[in-house]
Length: 244
Length: 361
Image (cartoon, rainbow over all chains, first blue to last red):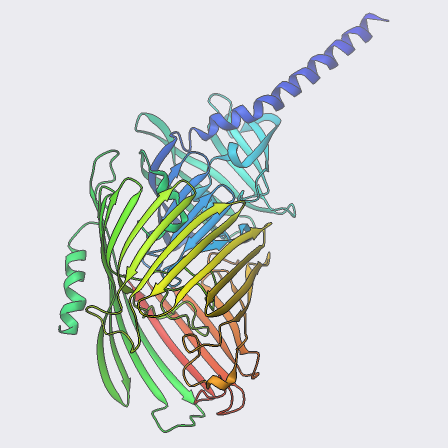
């Protein structure tokens, strides 16, 4: 066997090894990136969503989010028209409490709030819990060196079927994302605009979602008052969904 | 008490306090929620078969206020003030709910007037022993006029299980309908294998006892099924399902047959009518979906039918959000069936249309 052939085989082996390491580490990278969105095991905070149509502010929504672990989320709707409504997500199970029904109503994954910003964008931010990650490539994202991951939904309650996710090489900080439906249609893109120090850690405080179907629409999500807090399990019981 | 005093005093109290002033970690703090809605609705009836006004007006002011302290003490009140004009004007104040609660670990104690809904059905219920009356043509109580019952409640949560004991009065401060009885009820709820299930036993003082089961279950991405089975002298059965389309619309269908007893028989229906069977169908935009191009709209159409006499009533609702605080809506219903010889055919108009606007604060 010639030396050239030996070098070629060795190169292929190293390449394959590197690719498999990258795939194995993709999930760990995803877990690390989640810490910059929800760095505590139990916390509360508020999210304000402003929807824009043709560059003009159109509608505001305000939510209070309580999360415990990766699979328990309680969302209280605080906007004037939605006050008194609650959403509970326990793994794949979801309930909504609307004042006019006066009881928790079981909802299907397809009934989740969707639109400019979905409640999944507010309530399901543990991507490592909801998605399987595969390492795609490394590339420049503006001036930033980024890892690119492809995330595929592993749970029926996952908000999107597929996500292409750009993470800063230096610290796995989310930089941007593209969201896809089961049909393969590209429905939204996100830019993770702003991170700030919060309670001893660095957290995402602002992101912008661009509608890829109605190009004139975009939503700004502002995350504030986020604090670690020990939350009782009973807060996440569907029978108590009507209590703020 | 004067209507204006009932309505405005809690409002002024609520408005003077900040909403959730201190969410700081670990510090016990009081939190407040308050809201106010003002509804103006005009109604027009066509084809009236009884003498009366064919147009009416409703002005509705609904304040609510809730306070909790450090997750162990809470107070909540929800009021409604109505001025209804149909020929003459009548004013009325309603206390929808007013209750106080105390929490000790996993045990919650609540006393006061409260709306509880234990039924799993959308338009009907067989096990909702403490529920406000379920009206199939208005299952969501669109004007929020239902009132709770005066009760004492103990509620204990243990993991995925919960146990509730309630004693509900036939009427201490409230006037209840003639024949209302004190009710003692027990509910066991559990989440297992994807089923959200409850077993319920209740007894009306000096009256009958009910035992029942209900459940909900989600299958796949789009299907939810629910059912109720109860026994109070005879069996009551409810079966229903909901299917969510990828377009964002959802369809609900329910079948219900209540016992052929005086307790369940609709007003005006003779005992000789026998056991009744009902169907309910609804197609509407799922409440949480914001469909591209018309996210501001809510639209539903439903049909309730008495399957025995063939009478039915169609209901159509459309609403549109205007800005962050206004909501305009149209509600229309039209009954059909043999006049005077069927349940929905006995309704004394051929069509009723209501148009209104709601302001939220």
